[in-house]
Length: 268
Image 1 (tube, rainbow, N blue to C red):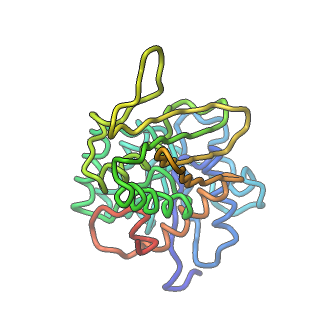
Image 2 (cartoon, helix red, strand yellow; image 1 turned 60 degrees about the vertical axis):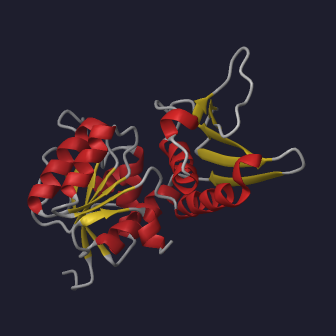
């Protein structure tokens, strides 16, 4: 039986690439007990032991399709946005804390997370890697200190199969810069360039690359006419995102209702 310090965990989107890594890595963490693994209703692996699917042997936890969080401290969500919306409602009603790593969320989704945060602890981040969240803080500080004399360009690269562009992480870098400098994402963010498109003062350029099997590479560049500063994060494997989400889940367990981010986990 788990002791009082063990976090009872549910993984939503458990049969996906990220979900299976969460299952495998949580299996090796004595501070975590996986109690539920959930995926879409038509998933062909439904009913199978999720540990076997993740390559760590039987865990006694089968892949289910129902959002049952009655015996769960924290749900980690890496699913599709539509499934995340349903999970937010279920967790808020059940009083279950939730770590959301799903990307491609809309303004309405963020409003739903804010509303759920009035009832339960909610942590959402565009990227769960600890280093990336430090990059957000560093990029914000660099932009504020350097000012508009320095051009800002954000470049992200991911594998060829990634659907959304730009990545949530790249948008997170841009948002951190805007928050620090008083810029506006809808006004100052420019996606790519074509034809006659001279750079305007104060713009933030955004560029998305899709290359082979790249897990994730993000660079924030700051340049004057005399120098250039680059801040880059490179993800070598998806485990960096899974490990960050597990750190966040352990941190979030038992926290009061509210909306949190990885900056809170890192104390930034």
